[in-house]
Length: 325
Image (cartoon, rainbow, N blue to C red; front, top):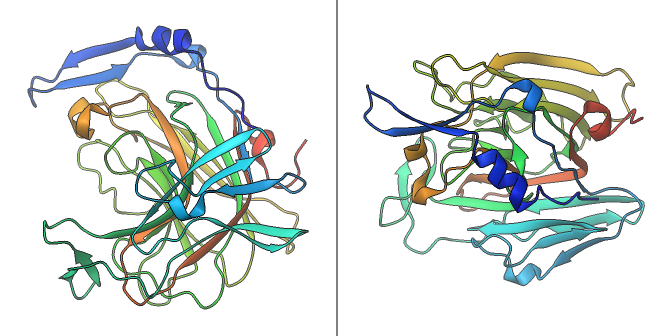
């Protein structure tokens, strides 16, 4: 069930806490939020793929690069916007009535018209304008998950047998989006032959000297296995004197053990504080979560991910796919 987003008045009140600063070195306007831990914003709740709920994919044929036009998930009182691109098919409901999954896949027979090989070694492709071609099949929350606050997400994920190895920059199965720019965090399938069942935990931001292409951790999820993850995100963009944010990841293989493993917890800057990093004046001090599949275009290849028990909320106990109080 989705709790309604903060009211317009609440958003306006939060906006008044935003301070504009001028970077002397870069000569560009930056936006930072001076909100402290004691003034943490409320975290809305989302859920998808929950047993006992009615799942409906609305207008799958209309799923397109315009988010929300089709392929949307309606579940109970909750709603997730769909988005498709390239070979990405509309989200689907698969499995039997007592073992359902939300499934995201590519069509191996899809071809981008006029596609040009960008990097033969990595098997990446671009269009005539030089844009890297992507495939996606995703469901997304609203733009109402706050910075400076612990936001928890829990989910079960499965990568079936028979999918191809990922090339290029990897395949995101979960992303954090602040604005029209690169994702500020997420979970991706490791690129390269033999890596198709390794998930990596990554982040992106503006901290000087940081290689954001390097994963914080890598975990194998096997073949045809359900794996539960619980992740804490506390988004804090880099700027001089700001506290660091935090990412913590917990894991359990479904059916194999009742013991939860803490993979890692790190204090890191991530997210954008500089308005110019966001195209089309899309800067926000909030983010949304997308899950499903987003990857570089691979003609002739099939990729698939399955999800269930997706929950987003304010505490670990509220989102765990297991041991929920």
